[in-house]
Image 1 (cartoon, rainbow, N blue to C red):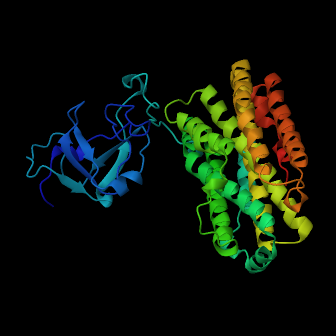
Image 2: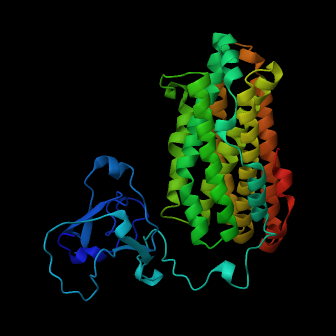
Amino acid sequence: MPGVTLAASCALYSIYGPIGSHPDAPGRKFPDNFILGDPHPACGREKVNRRKESRRQRGRTLPCALECRSVAADVGANSSIAAVGPIVELPLEKREIVPAATSPQTRGPDSPCPAMLRTAFQTTSSGRLDKRHPVFRLWQKSKQLGIWDPRDIDMARDRQDWVALTDPERDILLRLIALFQGGEEAVTLDLLPLIQVIAAEGRLEEEIYLTSFLWEEAKHVEAFDRFLTEVAQADADLSHYHTPSYRTIFYDMLPAALGRLRHDASPEAQVEASVTYNLIVEGVLAETGYHASYTVMRRRGILPGMLQVVDNLKRDESRHLAYGVFLLSRLVAEHGEPAWQAIQRRMNELIVPATGMIEELFSYYDRPAPFELDVNEFVGYAMAQFQRRLARIDRARSQSLAEVLSDGDLDELMTV
């Protein structure tokens, strides 16, 4: 290989976090093949040069407690090998991820998260997996009920039904699907920081379940894409269906709340993320929308493929909502009234755009709306579901953490 520099052991810890949040992390992302070259302006180490803009946009992120070191050549810490060239390109297979030799005490107060130095593994210690954990039981259900493939659903009849619909009927269904699809893509993109926080806290049973959570959201994106491509055959840009209130939540508030977890894993930040994601996006908006579309297709006997998709989605989302209720209940039991007050504060911030989004949806159609949809029916459904879950979280105010962990009523929170 051409010349080797001591840049081969350049540390990339703290890349996980907001861009520019650490002097060693001006960009946070790196391409599959990165270049080590110019000295870092802050610490004198070699920095990461990003040569391709497209790679920069699709770069990966390293957890904060890792270093990326080259093992391409025998260049050790005490090596005296001189640099033959100013730049060394290290292919992916030549890298090794090793724990960073950085303790929490050496990180500044603005560091995104502490070093995760391990002393043991739960599954090889005396504890093992807690199979009675309420979230681990959600994991078992996800394996039993969440194994479905969007490609296996027959949508041939759906295309025939779609062509036979009136223009207003097609428009309201296309509007709903455009809202669903944008939302499913948003949560697929935004969920990772929550998973990383749960992992960093060592909550293995919860993290195991959350792996299925993200996988299911990705399947929902694929399923709606099939409908838009094969049934609606909608080639045009559908973002004009995204109303101002929708954009407030999905373009701004959701990514901001989940993104905050990249540098702030406090209980308040976790509450803000879960209320936004689980209680509002999934529990009020998505669940109500799915209920509306499911009701239309079942009453009219149309779009059997999409009816099957929505039936699967509702089952998946019921587990997601159950996890959100558990997470908020645990945070309330652990941190008391400050966590409960944070829930109420976030709800107050979200209630206006959430209700505005439902009102905006129906504002484009004369009364009665296509398929005789009644806005009051679906607002009532949303509020009933929301109140049931909020009552369950409120119960945690008088429970200990042990009681929340032993509470087996998550099944009752599922709508399917």
